[in-house]
Image (cartoon, rainbow, N blue to C red; front, side, top):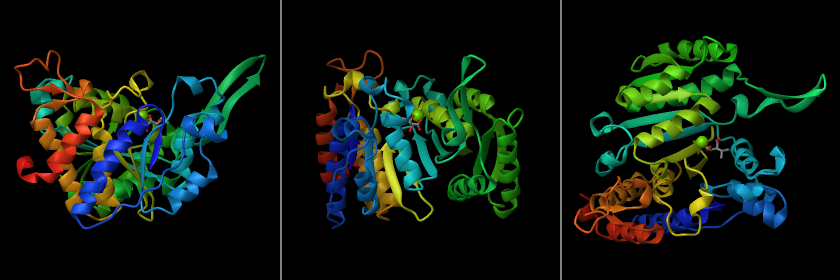
Length: 364
Ligand code: IPM
Ligand code: MG
């Protein structure tokens, strides 16, 4: 467990209780250890990713992370900020494949910013490359040139990086609806023209998958115009960061979107897509469901316990059907005494999930 900063500890606490309960139903005992990453690590030991944390992750079967960052660390130089801790985990553990499913739970259709009919039964998977692209390219920095400062980042991908993330996406698309959309900016950026060539060259190996391509600006527009046209989207690190926030909002709230970050050897780190939300931290207001759903992905991808994953997802569905909502997923005006919707805090949502897990009949 790497709870991190802001609302991280609150949502991880709920998710770990739910995970423990779901695993014990499968006869599996959860052994957990906690490490420092992000701002809390900076405060405690002066660096965002202490080497002990990386070692702890390497010794675990899987990692569940909350969130990192907050205003009190924003003035630090880039290399020492909390976010560097997260990026260091991703690169240090080789977590190149980031799976971000945007799934609409039917009771939340009204909480989406789009019309309910546009998002009903929405089920998109964004596959984001996570250890390359402009996030990691060199050279980078702010340099002095001709008496002014110049900021530089480098957008680079090598063929093998593109190929391995594309293969993950083709495989997943083959197990879903068989449609893969690769997102790039091949009309302007050479690096993504290469991306398009490499992805296209793989298509012949996956005859069961229909491959299409979109420029990122068009993809962003299509996501809010007609999101159900997508099945699996594969894209680079930065475009994936942006498009996954858009996709999250389609499902009602950023507070609902889980993610899995996987290495070539199958090792995984699981975290909600949302950030540390410092404005509501420590107030029992945070939505724990994205982290709970990340724990479900952990069961599925790292522990190979699909039944535990399904039990957790069923519990989430059950509490939503019962009308429980944290503030972020309540539609405007919901939560009056008579509308059957109850506004709850983080802990109460966690307790309701545990109850739902114990009485799965209700979830059906
Ligand atoms: C995400 C976040 C991170 C990212 C930040 C916190 C470094 O926005 O996981 O989407 O940009 O990857
Ligand atoms: Mg992001």
